[in-house]
Length: 163
Image 1 (cartoon, rainbow, N blue to C red):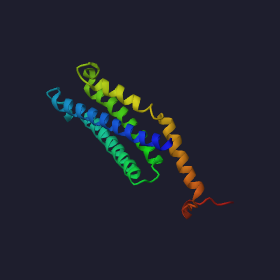
Image 2 (cartoon, one colour):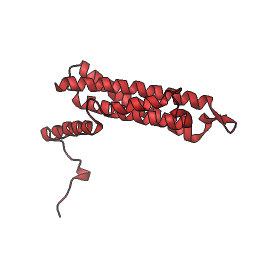
Image 3 (cartoon, rainbow, N blue to C red):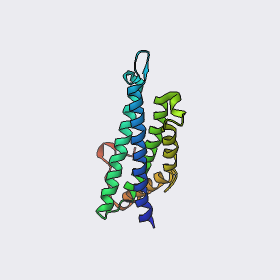
Image 4 (cartoon, rainbow, N blue to C red):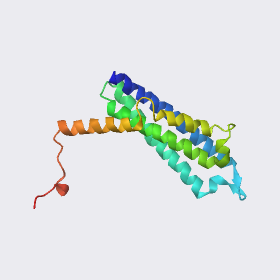
């Protein structure tokens, strides 16, 4: 049962990545085409920062998703990776959906532009197959089990000393 849930989390991460990419595409295209004060808004630092943040969150989530999918394909334990991929991708999708609306301004709310739908679609990816809070519990549980089962030394420079 858990393996099925973990596999589903990889699928949700993939869905979230698609939403991320769509949100980045609409924000980037709009920023390129929309002018304010005689120049494209893409030339404004605030817009460039938003696009950069969106791209970084997308790429990081994409790599985690690939890592989880590769571990699953190899028959390895992929529960932690699936939870990390689902968590990061769904939160990236929500961030990108929200940020796309910010870039589009008032146009982000009109139904002619899909940005508002991307945000709504992104929010649900944080809920099904386990909420973000549940993903944190899964990840922490796997980490704590690893440290309980393995003697991982504390580096000498940070070893607590008694006085």
